[in-house]
Image (cartoon, rainbow, N blue to C red; front, side, top):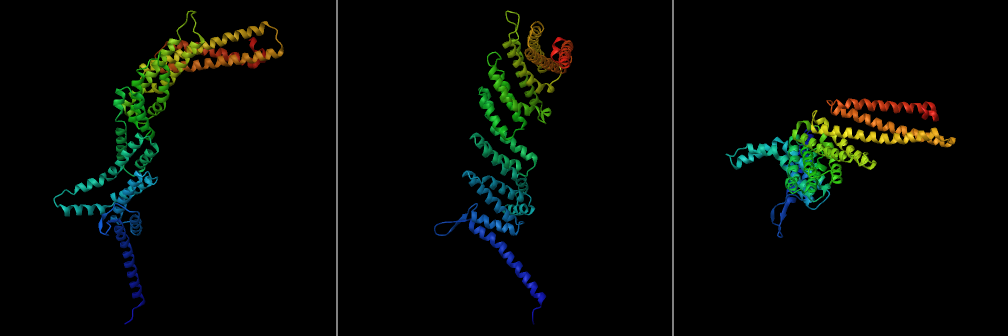
Length: 451
C-alpha cells in the first residue's frame, strides 16, 4: 500500500523536528565536552568554568532556543569567569564581558522555571531544608554579583587608575537593577573609599582627606554625603587659618572647595538633609567672616587719616571674595544669622571702597574741568580733554551703579537694618547727579563739561 502525499509531508516535517532537536541538543553536549579538562592520558578531570570554544557552542545553543535556562546558566558562568580573566589580564574587553555576563544572570533571575528547578534539586538533597533560601538567593543575586565592582572601583581609585574605575562605575550605573539596590552599592563604594578620612582629619592631613573624597566625587559628583564630607573637611581646615597669616592659603582652599560647594548648594536633596545644609552654611560663614575681618583691617586709616589706594584695593578684593561666598549661602539662613550679618558687612564695606574710588576719580575730574576752564587749549587738545572727561564720568557712574546694587542687596540681606535706607538714598542721589552730567555731555557735545 503506497504512502499518500500528505502522509509523506507529515513524515518530512517530523524528521525535520527530530533533526532540529538533535542539532539543538548537540551544541550543549559539544559545549560540555569542550569544558572538560583532561590529563596527559586523556582522562577527564572535571569541567573548567569556560573555554572560548565552549562559549561558542553554548551561544549557538542559546540562539536556537533562548528559553533553555540551563544553557543561559552556563553562559552566565562562562562569561563571568572570562570577564574575571580579562580583568586580571587588563584586557580592554573586560568591561563588555562583565556586561554580557550580567545580561545572562538577569535573564536567569527572571526565569521562574530555573528557580523551581533549583528548589526541586535542593529538596532532593535535603527534604527538610527551607526552600525559601532559594527565593532569597534569587532576590539578592544581581546585587551580590555587582558587589565585586564596588571592590574594583575602590581598588582602581586607590591605584589612581581612574579610567578603569569609571568602567566599573558604569557597569553599576547601567545595570538594570532597582534604584534602591544601586543606592546601596554606591553607598558601599563611598564607605570603603572614605574609610581613611576620619583618621586623616584627626591627623590634620587635610589635603589627603580632600583628595580621597574628590576621587569619589569624580565618579559620583552628586552624592550628597560626599559633598557634605568635603565641606566638613574644609571647615576644619579653614578654622585653623588666620586671615592675617594664611590669606593666600584661604584663597587656594576657596578655589578648591568652590565647585563642590556649588554642587552642594544646588543639590535637590539639600533641604531634606539638615547636616548637609549646616555644613554648607558653616563653611561659607568661615570664608565670609575671614574676608570681612581682613578687609576691615585694610580699611584702617593711616597716620594721615586717609586710606591708601593699595590698602583700599586689598580691602576691596577681600570684600569681593566674601560677597561671592556669602551669596551662595545666605538664602539657606534666616534673618539675623551670623552669615547674613557678615555678608551685609562685606557689602557695606565694599560700598565704602567704591565710594572712595569714586571720590578719587571725581577729584581728578575736577582738576580736568579746572584745566579746561582756565587754560587756552588748541581745538585738538580740547577734544582729547573732553574724551578723558567723558571717560571719568562713565567710570564714576559705574562705581555709583555698583554701589547702588550693593546697597540694595544689603537691604535684602538685612531687611531690619534701618541705617541702610539713608545710604541707599544718598547713593541714589549721587547716581542721578552723575547720570545727569553724562546726559548734558551728550546733549552739548564738547561744551558739556561747562554744565
